Image 1 (tube, rainbow, N blue to C red):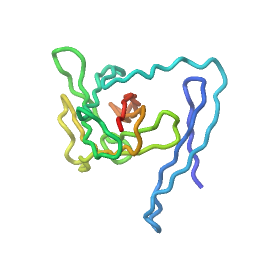
Image 2: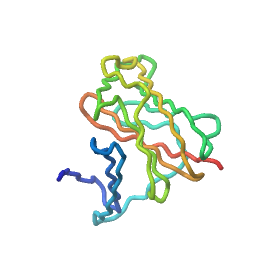
Image 3: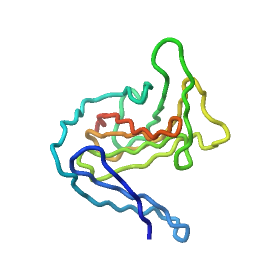
Image 4: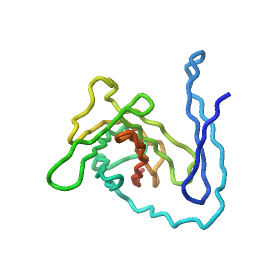
Length: 167
């Protein structure tokens, strides 16, 4: 039995996903549960974006020229400080990786949890402009949100990128 504490900051309908692999079977298992936080729900922008600013940093998700369903794609996730004089990005591992990407379809009926290709935690990426690479195959066309999870100086950030996947 596992117990986690999760305190959403805003009202709305939430879906929590669990993704785990038992050592005995080595098969990935997934579960989800919905719950509602009462109150006035904010209007969420779902415009396509490959850049985002927050937590004092600029984030970018570099996609292939065309992202097609069923085709493997290479993604690059970058972080840098704003302005021309670049400051060190205090990137720290979170759950055994320097970042995670989680892709959800618009209806939140499915997801993919991605780890970066760079797996050696003793070799951190460049400290002024860290870049991590990911490989993904999205099965169906449509609108997806890809959330990046990073830890910067011990503060976890979740960065949303809305992308369109073509047939």
